[in-house]
Image (cartoon, rainbow, N blue to C red):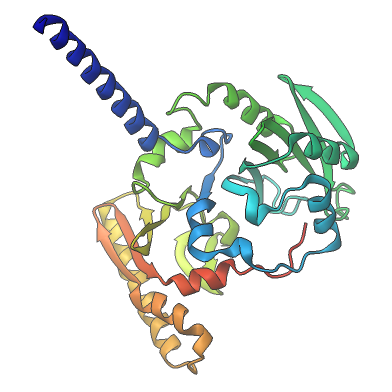
Length: 332
């Protein structure tokens, strides 16, 4: 009797260990929405579920434009209520003065959608459709006519399954097709783009929002990064790993990955001087009660060097997060 019992116990332990290992792999792997993204210069990911619980932004009254309200009425999708995860791929455009501007985007949205209603709505506004790998890709004109090219931006949208939507505003179908191709390999916890494979290991465990790659792309100005009108001494192609993680309080961490330790030391020294100057300017401004949370964030910021990285850390007050997520008039 003992031998079968021992074997049964060993079998159960082996199954539990295998299950624990599988769960660990899933936790350590990038989120599926990020794994679906095509090759890009940067990736931004946000898990909206804890943000919704912390700020209740889905309960706030929103003043919507007429077009946006028509979208909600037609599809039943209320983004602030129904979206759970969003992932964006940022693509540097060869022609910054083209319809897309300096940066193009590919996106994956996960949440709760009525697929049939969404398909009817997309078909009603699309100017073209194609079938790729069993999925319908809708092409939708977005924005005004570009005076130089006499064209408009094209947004391509496809439903991957009942809870996932993909979109891309890139000029060709390459990126949306790539997302559909990756959808077949998404079961692998370590699939994804080369950028994701190279940098996701640097994202802190359990980060609720993170970004990797050339994050300066949307803030590029004459080859450098400008934030709130302040030009940073960093070229626009500087590689960053940024994250927000809630562990009792909301921790902000931004790492600049420098070519050498000496470069990281110079960046940390220069950025520390700029941060000190910015703090002194803020202290000289009139104190407005509504800005108290922002002042708390600025006071908590510090910059340190860790080997080949200049690292900025700070604590984001929950009140500031609520202010930032409070919806204004929403455009489509």
